[in-house]
Image 1: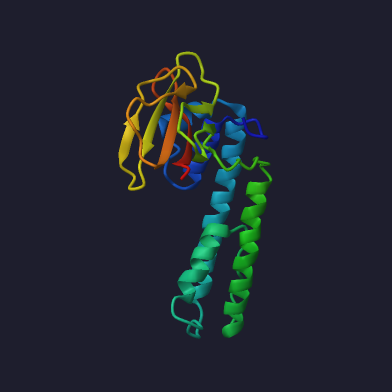
Image 2 (image 1 turned 120 degrees about the horizontal axis):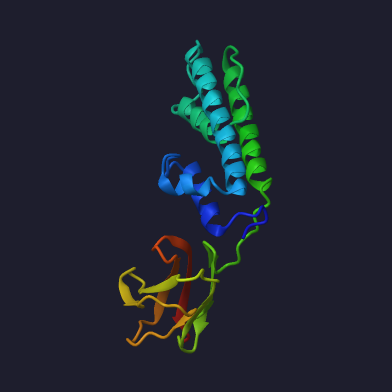
Length: 219
């Protein structure tokens, strides 16, 4: 649960919407909007997105009106991308090279706007082995032996975990069956260095949280 009251699943859903990976018509989004906290944060996100688009349109118009060429190849793309990604303000058209200076300064200011928006949500910083809501406990780092794989996460009723173990080449070298407990002991031998992933699912098979860690047998 985040500091603003959102579950880890809702946090990831908001991030996927911001990245453009999910649309507002997605069934998961429609279901999540029934939660007042999620709906409030989604409204804030959409408001910022609309401001970004308006700023990008205004910047395109300003750039197209310039008489002088950009100061270096690709500068127009740099400014447009900066405004599109970090907007909250617009750049007023001017003339000559002063326009490009103003555009660059505005783009830097817009970065600060975006940082403020994310920091205003007071999201806690995850620990080094916390990824997507599941804390991987062991094995982590250099270990004498792998032993049981253990993690921390509270499953809802009917939920389950699945664990995958990969080698250095990212090939799968181990996988668990569906698990109700937060531990698992592989039966097959594992290579000297591994990366392992654990995922939590609801009773309907919806992914709720993920975690990953790396471990290696000490020499």
